[in-house]
Length: 106
Image 1: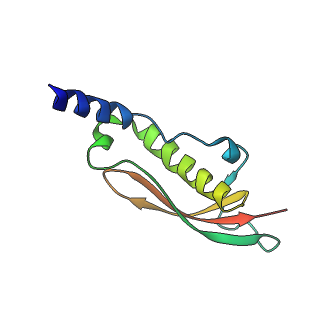
Image 2: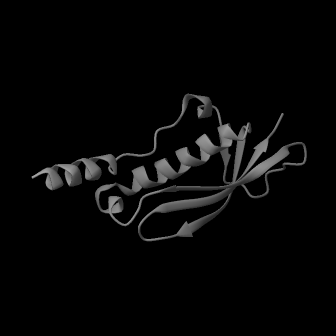
């Protein structure tokens, strides 16, 4: 019985997007690869992801993408940056995953 309860709790945890941290609320995400970053300071390469082999069955596509973008924003805040420039979306069947760069722009 305890095993089923643990499995049920695991499934419920997988059903929602990664939460956005308060420090990441104002992070700008740009899909425009032509966006100029010449006046910005590069902070690092990011990989944002949500989902795995079990949780993707119970998580809406929208929540997978939202969670992956929230993951990017949270990492960007940890780098002390304020802008995310998306470079690539990796096509996986069990998760939403993005590769991006973090910048601090004036």
